[in-house]
Image 1 (cartoon, helix red, strand yellow):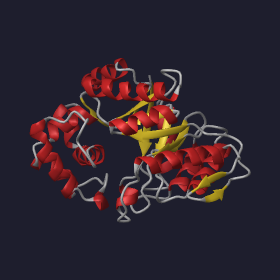
Image 2 (tube, rainbow, N blue to C red):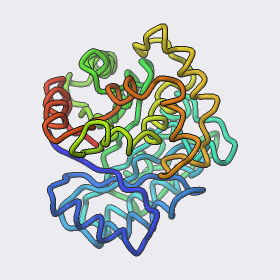
Image 3 (cartoon, one colour):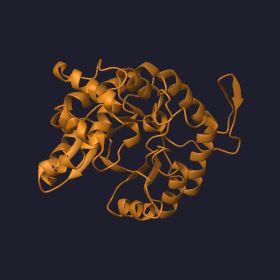
Length: 311
């Protein structure tokens, strides 16, 4: 199993140092989060990372179909691929804080699928009929691997059928991971792809400390963010205990997108404790605790068939 880390580009002066450190300690993949209302520009940040690193694969974790036209995304990631010597990957999802802070609704599954197919076609230098208009990025000739972030059963299956890799954000418990991998493989079979050809990446909030409680305490805002993203739209097919459906619905309503992933005493940081969800969310979405506890959780994730653990 390989390892990746997402860096939130809060400070462009510190970004090259963080990227070099991540590569030096052994991360195989470096992702940059996209949220134009909260963080520095995605592709400026990826340019900085491309020039600060030598071997790690780099890309958005993740962009979306709503805030960037597919030709803009294709041209941008092809440029990063050139700049990095062929190390780019493209992560795409339906949109979280990037779209919510613009008061937009996240993309639907059909939009996500069409966007991904449009970008892949454009990267090969061919034209694509997108929303009844012919578009192209005529200079691009290299298709970067496309990663789709997925939570629901239908999105997991679609990603298995269409993408090169799937970033699973359904949870990290053995039951949830097994079901997620099964959905991806179902999508492969339906599309006639070789089973197992789609890489499985698992997304985890990570915190390591001398004491379990300390590690969890430092990532409560991140746990709320994971719950808000993974359980939006519907809880059906997502292995949520009946007793927690009400509290999770309340978390979704009260989550503050403008505070997404921000540290400190934010409203989001208080939600999981108030609603009695902290232990459940930490078990489901985090690799957190003492070094020994994190090692044990990581081994469990690997045994579920995960190719890349992204923290």
